[in-house]
Structures are given as structure tokens and as C-alpha cells.
Length: 333
Length: 149
Image (cartoon, rainbow over all chains, first blue to last red; front, side, top):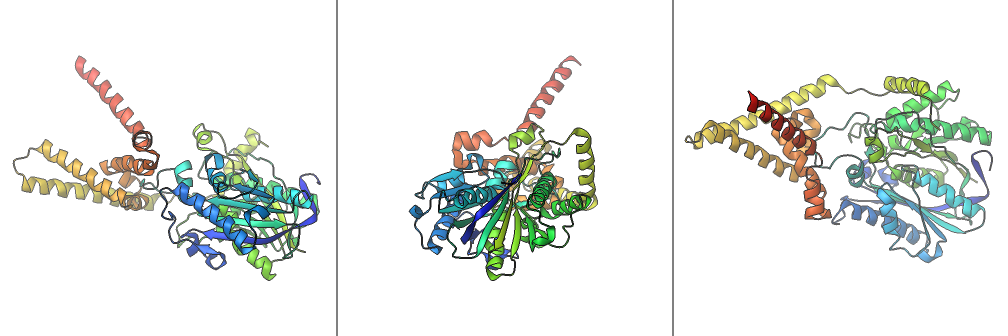
């Protein structure tokens, strides 16, 4: 480990991914990159929470099917989501026979899982791990905001929680040449933003901090990467990040994008600032970016999922919103 | 890492500069039109009641009108239409009695899975609760003042 960056000397291969996208995501610009698109986000269940659990379970089961493995072949599962006490992930694991770490870093959970799993795999402590995340628009709205049927207006700064599930299979052996080479663990950064609708502004400083730490620790340049992609800063948040980076002498105008921006058609789908939620970076990476890496269009990407670590209680008590971002260097080796 | 207060202010000023603002004119216009239309519907219901039941006095008519408006809102909320009106009209659909009805029905629908008593009934007033508290407190206060003058 160099400063905050873990170097995975033994490469950790991402050999398979599985994605399940919600109906709205399935109409977005990345629709051709998802394995499954749901027609209905309730899935004939009695509650949206149950539907999210079903989505999460199917993502993992599909991953195992696609890689011809059974649940017992996996040494460790890392899963997380947005709900209180991460019930979607924990309840998913009732159906799956395997050791499980439940993790939470809000929308940066996917990166947290990938880094933790990579540490164990690169250290040769385990051979195979599955990292999964899920989120659901209806469950997140209910937990953090208002009832779905309440006739209220969304602010221009709001973001749309992605409905879906994503899972990735990490292994020591190389069935593909896509590997995680570095992981930079982020700090909790709080710049005093108190508006719970303005997640982009709360998370942008964390993203910048992690990107700068990563570049400093690895001695790499911004141009080294084909793409630097943050998790869910949204349109305004990514603009803010570019401005802040410029003042620190980093030029992000050429090869930077944001998963929250990529996942929806902003105007047509009325999502204001774009997508958010742990599955935002999960779906975009496991669906779109993974396919692009497989095709060799991208060779080196820096994935920087961002998370806003607030709860409904903390925002009611007028606490500011701390942000976190982890960076993963994913390259063709 | 927590930024000190001075630098926080600088950052928040920068954020305000970068972030998009609410379009005040268009949202107010939409609210005006929506609110106006809801009132027109209310007025026409009231006229209809007067037409069919000429024996009703003014108070009874307004009572029935309010009931009809609440009923319509509850049905529209149940079918998922009122939230669309709300996202278009904003305060125009919140201020009339229909907005109040919607704020009671929507959490009730949302929480019915947690059971009738602890889910539906307990959460029914989670949004409208403060309005009722202030309404009751204000009327008690006015009542006391009225007693002495």
C-alpha cells in the first residue's frame, strides 16, 4: 500500500458481470448493454422492498449461471444497498449459500466491495468473490424523501435513484484480461453542504480528493486513463468537479464522464441532474463499461464511485452531508 | 476531513454559482394555472349542487363541495394521477384542499404494507400532521381571545 492506494500485485480479474435494469433505465441510452430489462418495477411482489430483494437475488443468480458456477463455489460475497440496515443485500443472502460481508458506503458501495474483494484475492487468501449492489427508485424515495403518490415537485438539483441490480465475479484466474490493478481508498470529506437534494455538490470534493490522491500515489497522469468516470455526481456535480479540478491544475475536460450522466437521457426522461444510487455505478460499470473493456475500446479506466453518507435523521438535524469516493484502476493486462 | 467554516462559505458560494436555479417565472405561472383550474372545478361542483338541490343553504353546499373535492383527489391519488398534476403544478396543487387530501392519502398508500394500525394509521398524518397541529392550536388560541372580547 502506498499512502492511500492499494497495489494489487497479483492481478484480480473481473471475469463476468450480470446486470438487471429497471424499466426507466431500460429506456435510457445504455439499454443495449444490460443483460435484463424489467418491464415493471414491482415484479408482482407485495412491496417495492421485496421487489428490490428479488432484483438483487436474480443479479447474483444470473452471474453464477453465466459463469457456470454454483453458490458454493464462491469464497466470499460482498453486497450492499441503500436501505436501512442494508436489508436488500442481507435478505438476498438468505437464498444464496455462501459467506457474506454486508457493506455500506451509500452510492460508493460497489467500489468498496470491489476493493475489499480485490485485497483478499490479490493476497491469495481467497480465490473467488462476488460483489453485488442493488437500488430501487421507489424504496429510496420512501426512505429518504416523500411518498411516491405525493404531488410534490422535484427540485432542479434532484437526482433519480437507479432501479436495478448489478453483480461482478472477481477471480485469481484469468478468463478475461480485465483486471483491477490499483484501489484508492477514499476519505470522508465534508465541505459543509446541507441541502440533501444537492448530492453532487456534497460528493464532488470527495471525488476530487480521491482522484488527486490516486494520481499522486501512482505517479500517473490524467491522460494515462482512457476514461475517468465518477459514480453519481450528476450534470451539475460533474461540472463542479471539472471547475474544482481546474483550480488544482488537473484537466478533466477530455476524458472524464459520470455514470449518473451516462445512464439517462436527461431531457426526455425528466431526471433533472441524472441518476444516483449504488446501482448507478454498478449498472454503468457492469453493463456499459465492462462491455467496452471486453471489446478493447477502453483499455484503462479509473472508476470513482461517489457516496453521500447522509441519513434522513442527520439531514433533519441540520447536519452537513459528508461524501466519500473510492477509486479503482481497471485495465486490460 | 471537515473543512473549516471560512472555506466552507467559499465553497458554498462557488456551488451556488455553478448549480442551476429554479425557474421562478414558469413554475409560478404553472402553479397559478393549476391552482386556478382546481378552484374552477370546485366552483362548478358547487354550482351543480346548488342547481340540483336548491333547498341547500350556502354552508351545506360548501361542505358538500369540499367533500367532493377530497373524494376526487383520493381517487386520483390512488390511480397515480395526482402526483403528476403535483409535479406540474407545484404549490398550485398543494395549497387547495386537494393538496391536503393528497398528503394524507399518499403516505397511507405507501405504508399499508406495514399493517393497518402501525403502518397505515400511524403514518397517515406524517406529512399533514404539522398542518393539523398548527390548525388546532391556532383555533384554540382564537377561541380563547374570542371568549374575552
